[in-house]
Image 1 (tube, helix red, strand yellow):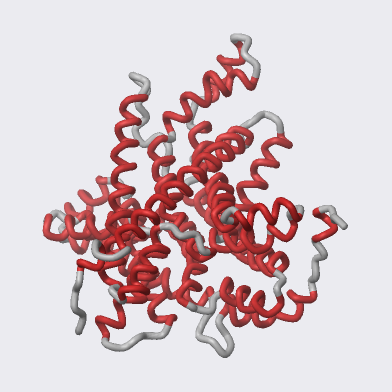
Image 2 (tube, rainbow over the protein chains, first blue to last red):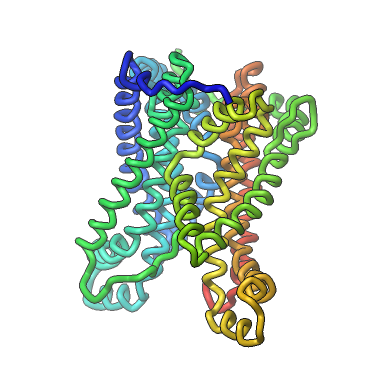
Length: 241
Length: 236
């Protein structure tokens, strides 16, 4: 083994700035994709438990279609196959404004929306059916029952699996490097290319990912305790997917 | 003249028909000029990963902290790092350690086995913990040692309970093997990229491979679901 360590490459030269840029891009894309995924996931997850069959089918079709294909294939699909279908003005605007970022955002958000949907469905199904019946019998409409009774309970139940899924989204944002998004893994490779110090660059990237995941996990554990309904703390009620 | 979106989709299935053999035989199965193939990577990776996973799962349940602490760190480390990062680690580190660069296939296989073992170890651990305590006590009461009880009583029952989770993990792995294409391994995704570079037909090609992944993944998830119901009839 012949390798000389030179950790100073991480703070001399441009490497530090690149890492910071990468970190910001990773957080940015993960955060935006997370919102997209949560909206799609809550919508379709609630639809999958709805009493109307066509709603259930539509949501099931979305979930099964997107989650059974690798994220990388969706990245290529959104980046290479979708823009030619768009109107010329939209396409030109996109390619002037970082099309790869928007494509990666769609790929991540839509793919993880399908996965969030399963988490939310499991959460809703873990609530006894009598809750829904009681809500409707007090005169609430189906939509009101979902908004006021079912979702507030389900959202609390799913905090642990949803945290897990959010961390998956964060880690999966690294796949965006394949279409040229300059996120953290991309920058790590760039440092390696410029300094030929693979070990140091990868170690820096890895530590940042680990710290990010650890921070979010700790934060969410706190959120879980903060929002727990007294007497309704579900211990492992919802299985992790 | 402006065209409506649907007029722009002039789907050409010829590109699929012409490259069908390359995509399926080379890309999916791995027969052909390149050492590649989605299945040729996924199948050995799940088998070897599971073998390593048994040790990790058992290690996490070991009484000695010299065993369970390192195993816990292993699992938490790999579950906290993106797979892309792990693949790059092995891609750069193996040549330094071995002194020469290995083919993409070996690098990808090692990376997947090491990475998946962390997840498979958790499945093994959950499987072992799902066996009722009374079984261990009964086994020990008949005079078996701890190791014997594990081998003859606990693991066979645990394995049965693990099967649905293992099928699910194989689905995840099958989709994850697409990431081996970033170091140049010719799997189904890379095969589609190679064809697309020549034909510039991304819509048809990427949807086609999506359909193949979808069929495998969806088919197996139905199978896992059926297995789960057969093993555990009262649930679901």
